[in-house]
Structures are given as structure tokens and as C-alpha cells.
Length: 179
Image 1 (spheres, rainbow, N blue to C red):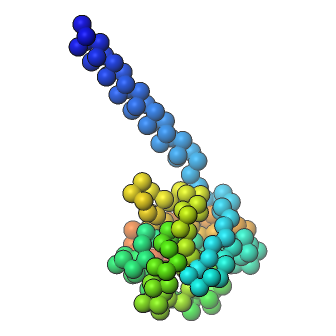
Image 2 (cartoon, rainbow, N blue to C red; image 1 turned 180 degrees about the horizontal axis):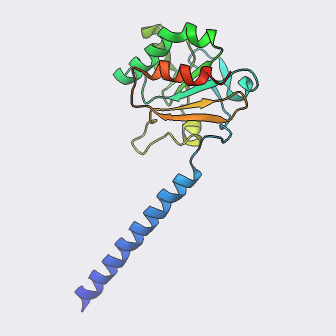
Image 3 (spheres, rainbow, N blue to C red; image 1 turned 90 degrees about the vertical axis):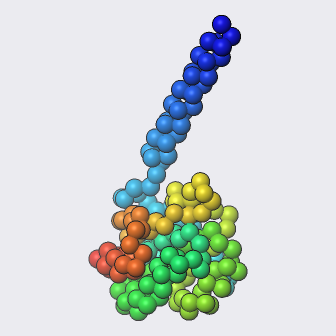
């Protein structure tokens, strides 16, 4: 009888855990950012102490806000160098790019200097902005996701980046059409 009660209790507990986990996933999906929504505002600093506030670009130009996992890793380096190499086109088309990671400012400064990066990379060391945008994952770093924000401050496009090498040209093409 004890074994039967224990088995029944264990089964009920597993069902409850599965149900609450499924409900939690649904809530996260419902609370996620979607195109057309206002992009969460933020103020972050780059490694050199300069402050960047998303709302300061409102009414002026579209902004590419891209989150990357870790400064200096191969994928993040390819992604950042692609933007670096196309930076003159971003400027010509009046598109601002802001790269964000949870790296410390010292790690970002080394990344910028090692690869001569010529656009702002911002530190979200406290993970607040990453969590606001829903990109911070359970493994403890940001997912590689890009948000293209229009001049009105609305999210025009969300890109789960798979093609790292083509990322810069893709976001430039999309964001340029928002001017």
C-alpha cells in the first residue's frame, strides 16, 4: 500500500511540474517582444564611458540593436567585423548600430581594440536590458538576436541570427528602408 501511495504521489507531482513548466513557457511567449511593439528604452555605456540612450534616436534614424553572446568569440567577431566593414554604408544610410552583451567593459574594450571596431558596443553587465528584451538565456549569456527599431521607436523586425556572415548586409538593407 505504501508503495502504491508513493507511486501515485510521485506521478501526480511529475504531472504538476510538467503542467506548471508548460504554463511558464506560455507566459514567456505571451510576454515576449513582437514587431510593432515599442522597443524597451535603455541607457547603457560603452567601454570608453560614453552613454547611449535608445530613445535619443527616436524621430531621427532607425537603430539596429543587436545582442551577441561573448566578446572575442569567433561568431561574435565575424558578426562585429561585418558591421565594422560596412560601417560607412550604415552612416551613409543614417542607420545607428548598437551592439549589446553582458560582458564587462574591460572585455568589450579589448574586443574593440583587437578588431578596430568602429561602432558602439555596450555593456549590459547587470543583464537588465538583456532580460527586458528577452534574449538572456538559461545558460547565462545572450542569444544572438537583432532588433531593428524604426524612427518611431517601434520594433520593425526581430531576427534570430543564423547567418552571421550575412548579418551586416541583411540588417543594413532592412533598416535603410525605414528612413
